[in-house]
Image 1 (tube, rainbow, N blue to C red):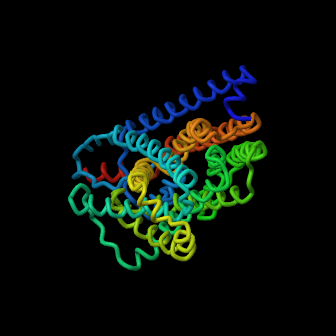
Image 2 (cartoon, rainbow, N blue to C red):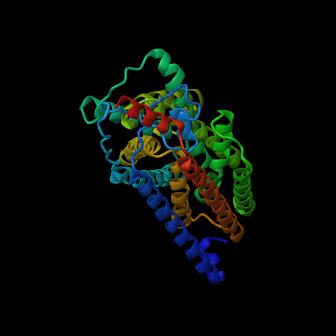
Image 3 (cartoon, helix red, strand yellow):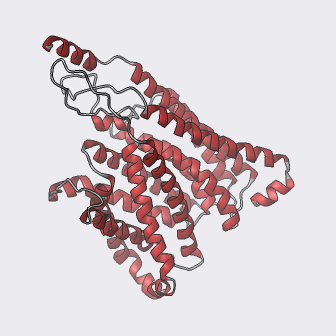
Length: 408
């Protein structure tokens, strides 16, 4: 039964569905308000101190959702600390909105190209966006729009950048391939399970501990996702496994990207200038090893020549999506990115039912609602941990105060 038929047969469900959408909107506003409050907090001067065990490393603290430490210079002895201007809110919120719009448009366009236009080659399709990301980010740096401050050695590229590119390429390939087996709506529902995979990866990297209250929230999320899968009318084990591989790759990409961005002062576009070619290299290697024969047999390049504007659009959208996503990870965190993404995915579920005729069952809608409740509970618990951490006194702050008094 499709969504339209479901609402016609059960008029009461229309109110429930509207309430769910209003809740999603309210939750998005709440997240934006929470972020605004965090940006306007009073400044706290901290210095890196390797001997202080109470201070987490910058990257590890960010991965746990804790505030990052800023490395600043203290003023001369006796001089008052100058107030620090809070970061501007508009660019970050703008990046979030651009990422939501570009990512959803890219998903719908890729689905259309693979099904309506018959370009069923996910690696080649993903490589268009990464090649555009590489060329446009290089142009932005060379033309002076972005100041490139890093020199990347061969060892750094192989050990730090290439793993991110490989994880990114795997995420794009498996993510696009999933649309060949399951519907857009079902893919978005499966994406609500990404915190489970992400937490497993963070535990593996020793950046998170599997605490009981978080595990309970994640079990609720898993139960809702399983119920959504049970209610899927066009279920495919192959599609589910492919999507699971995409989520594992996405979790690895988020962890590695945030560790990279938080370890030094990378500008997001500059980071993309180095990440995009490593990802494109992996994708193009896969194209020639796996997809090239099928592309020649199906005259895939002729399809691109017939509709160049659509394929150029997917390439540009890929750049916009990658750039905005990198900015969001840099300014906020991978956890905030998932909150915004899951909220946007719920709207994409609704759009896909009308654009592609994806059918949703009542069981599937209930399962998705349970998954979203589990996701909200998980993020509320994480937010509580962050607030508790901020209220905890730090020996570093008192140490700085005592040194300042002694010198004055």
